[in-house]
Length: 356
Image: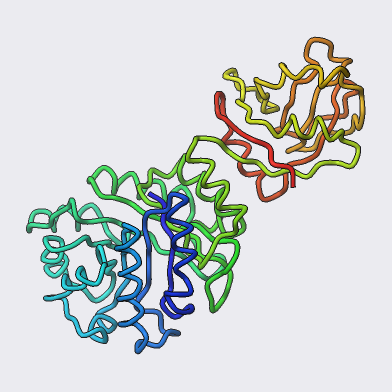
């Protein structure tokens, strides 16, 4: 499941609703909001949270709120009647510090509960299960890390996820945004430190392929339309890779190279090979003349010219730096933000080059 973050102090819910609706239409099904951020004014929470709950209900989206005991009290609730928040459109609460195990157990029979994935242990889970925890209503949510250099490492992260999954717990993590970032640091909000400089889709793809997660949520306020298009197209199992053309490339070849492709099943070491492109051996009535036969840096988009004979027309994306070859024309290069996507275009993976 994909999700977004909506922050109550970040403009009115009415102002944020068009973005929420757009994300829902693009396949995002969950909303996360936080109710214990010191920089925010608690007085705005009640009306804003009710408005957000109404939007979530109308769009049939999950709404999970991160809440502290103080914030719960500010809303007029306590742990005994916290489930009444369900009538506001909430689906569940993420609770962390200051909540005892018995309260967690009791709440798990009333609503969905998300616990801190980093601090929960197999022993504590088993202990709470023995005391009556409704494990089917419990999730494990990783934090996001606003300060650079404090995010988690991949290896420990995966190990923890496997432990939680083996206990039958739903696991969630955050990826960064790339449009409107969350203050006060504006340094992006990933769970993994290595994702801080990645695009939202690149971070998502790595988590989706490696991390054994059930939910992936954008931590920042918004993602760009270009990133959203990548998520939208991926619903059809197609990876969009953006690339910049060089000035020497023929426009007809550029148009043909933007068609949907499939990487060959016999996955090459040094390049992604577009199966369908060999059918474009001749564009119109012309053969592919040698042009711009320069060094092929990683991410270069190329086409084999007439000197490669029966390979003429094959379109590739290089996975390593390769030398210039008089038989290979360089059409352009994948943008830096999308280079991390290339290792995930395995054999039989559909992909598309979008010239930007």
